[in-house]
Amino acid sequence: MDIKIDEALVRTANQCTKNLRCLDPSCQDLCEVKHCVQGKVHFVECLDMNFCSYQMSFGSGTVCNCPVRKEIYNRYGL
Image (cartoon, rainbow, N blue to C red; front, side):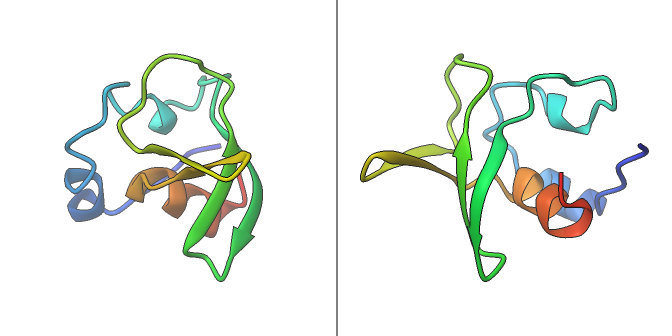
C-alpha cells in the first residue's frame, strides 16, 4: 500500500530516531495500535524494541505520540 502523509505533518516528526521508517511500504515492524481513543490517544505494542522518542509508558501500556504514526492509523487503519 502506498502511504501518503502531508509533508507538513511529516516535518513535525523531527524527533524520529527511526528515520520515518513507518512510511516505507516494506516496513514489517510498525508499532501495532491496540486501541485508539477518539483518533488522539493511540495505545500501541511496539514490535521494534529500539528507542523511540515518541513512545510513552502509560499504566501497563504504551502510548504513541508520533504525529506520523497516528496519522497512518487514523487514515489507513494500519
